[in-house]
Amino acid sequence: MFVLGVDPGLSRCGYCIVGRTGHESRAVALGVLRTGTTLTVAQRLVGLRDEISALLEEFAPAVVAIERVLFQANARTAMSVSQASGVVMAEAAGRGCQVVEYSPNEVKEAVTGFGAADKNQVKEMVKTLLGLGHIGSPDAADAAAVALCHLARQPAQPTEVAG
Picture 1 (cartoon, rainbow, N blue to C red):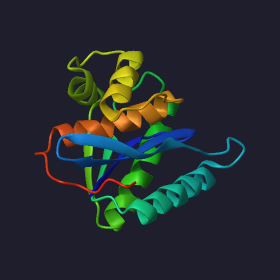
Picture 2 (tube, helix red, strand yellow):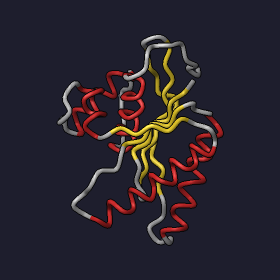
Picture 3 (tube, rainbow, N blue to C red):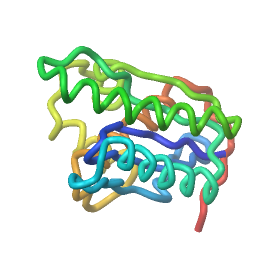
Picture 4 (cartoon, rainbow, N blue to C red):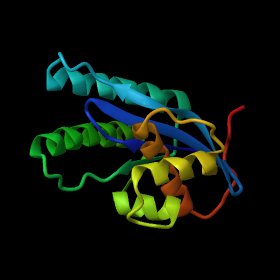
């Protein structure tokens, strides 16, 4: 079983596929999906849906864990993040995946032990927990943290880990 963690966004949508064996978690795919800023919002959402669909097809995660969209000072940003989040949730649910949401504070608490941790603290803990030497994008690190948050809230069970 795999968990797909998602840090939703219209311009940049972080993702991480995590598998767990016993108490050990491993990232099997990690990155950022990007949409072209010259496209219409509708075209960008279709592109995001297609990319998420490809990840769901390739890895068949049982669970899609997504960072919950909270009120932001910039309404335009909040709207586009909400739209991206909705596309991801609909595509995952349509494929029979369990979809769960976690607040940013829940994610930070699960990964660092401190609900007000900063992005660098989250990124460093993700690297440690997944045994990664480098994570290029904060969006990918945040997505990995969401997947790890979900796994931290589940009893340890054997899961598939590729490779």
